[in-house]
Image (cartoon, rainbow, N blue to C red):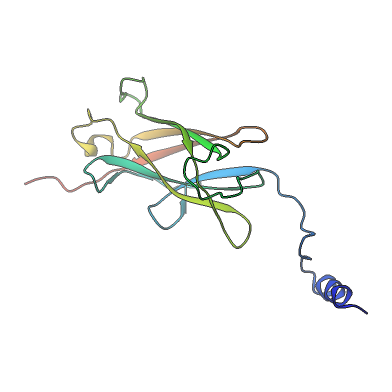
Length: 173
């Protein structure tokens, strides 16, 4: 029996996948948060507002996904075939000039392909409006996040999250 056939028989006997024969994954994506470690936005998670390195308040939005086509070099920022992300963050009573709290449109995502075949990107900085004088004003307020990921091929994918803001910064003496 040839090596390939032996490997196939062994993989089937162990119930494991055979390389190149995996079932295709339906396109999906999800948002998370974190600057280097993933924390999904599902469940009772609160959306954390952070003070960025350049002095602006922001939500560091991470992205995971899979099942859609990536460019040959998926980590190249600004590749014309990179999936694009639109994110809108709404907090009642707080809006910038665009009518929402914060928005990012058409952000090209340079995904890293993980060992399991899924895609991941850390992070899109969704900036709070400059008019937010005290970030503690929005602590524990309800927030709605609407996101659309548009791959170069296939249908746009949409997610909506209903959360609360976590922005408990120390106050000045």
